[in-house]
Image 1 (cartoon, rainbow, N blue to C red):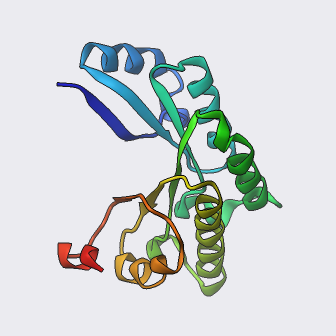
Image 2: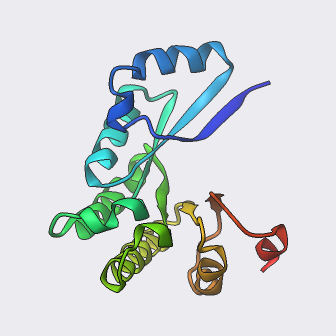
Length: 170
């Protein structure tokens, strides 16, 4: 049996000293692909670099996580979107991710609006590139499902989906 780890944050600083070991462990465990999910522009570049350094094992998912939307630098949303569009045809990016909404990390209305703006920009990039989306939906599954059909996105992986399975039928 072969496996694909569709959700690992290899570009996070907590893994920086462990990446080589994680790669070796994956190979020994019949893992044929690791999807390195990103949290912001910096980790998006790191995920892309890991994919370039390990072209037969690691693939990048690039995006801005809702937990990071309130700490964005000027133009980071646009730069991340541009990176996605620029690199989409290079075959090292296989998804937009991890993106979404998480009300626990939006402490006020301004932060909530920024999460929405960030998420919608990432969905727009997914639509433009026809890439799948890895969606973080803790506490926001119904909300996300209400506007997701307005985008032309064919493949979605829900992460931290917190509602009954019946919601997915929509």
